[in-house]
Length: 397
Image (cartoon, rainbow, N blue to C red; front, side):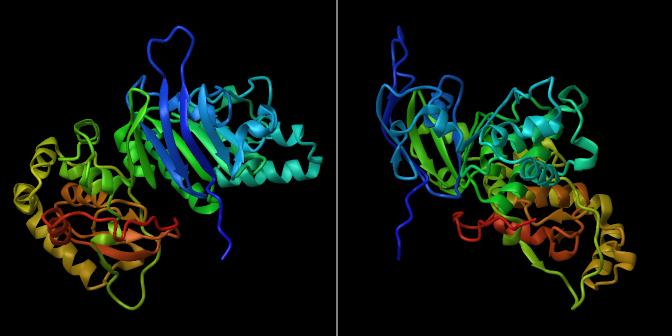
């Protein structure tokens, strides 16, 4: 079997800026496999953005070596290197005098693509970003919302089909709702394009949601690298424990896929599409969150009692309808909106708490129900043994 070179290897990379009293990055070594989404997580000044910029040589290392697909990054010109690495920043950086299509076509034009190939690529990327080409192709950046601008920025970074995508806090300037939508969009896009992505953020929840692997940085050094579950279950240092909230049960639930608590959809034939709820644990009350964070199944019992008291009669009727498969006209007879397969156990907990503990459907990318989540299943996982990486997968939308 032919050995596949890692997409990116950092070998004891350091950066000292002139006049600085300490290195911005100090002897960092990291291997990123092809198709992996790695999140650099840390507070301001931790060195994560400097480390990112050294990969495409916007910042040159003081020491150490960076390999891209097995080749020393300094063996080619910085301009040539950047043509094969997509780059997305928080400010987007769209050219205001150009249309959306012209912005996306920037790199393909530089590479000398013919007009038809560029037009086809622009339209396919707009469709991938869920921006209908006929509506958005000729708009100017000022005619777009912040979320739409960021989508165009991602499309521009992907235009020449680079194998590597660097993203420097791309959603940091957006409101909470738009940010969560774009996080879901990024996961959907990545499930289709399978790029190697390095994503910088200081948002812990964003890191836990997006990352295949998280690299925690502090004072220019790598504190720990591992999957979200590994870092939450086995934090290497007190700083990592505090940063990730490793003692918080809700954080642990946020990295478990809903498939861990999902039962198969009842009945041989699933009904038609149902309404899909936005993911996120906003629906959970602060009191329930504090109780859940205690880390035992009993901590969730008060929320369960409250939910049953609020909706016992309605809940019983809805549970009977759902479990019996008697959903009319493709709707879940009074049940809460469904969750997508990309949801977490934490999302399921929020939906259950907001819906008086009635069962919640899980749907695939076509809106077809594939499973059902019950309160007792979430409670069992919340109060179970050590969390492992078993079953942590992302279903394609």
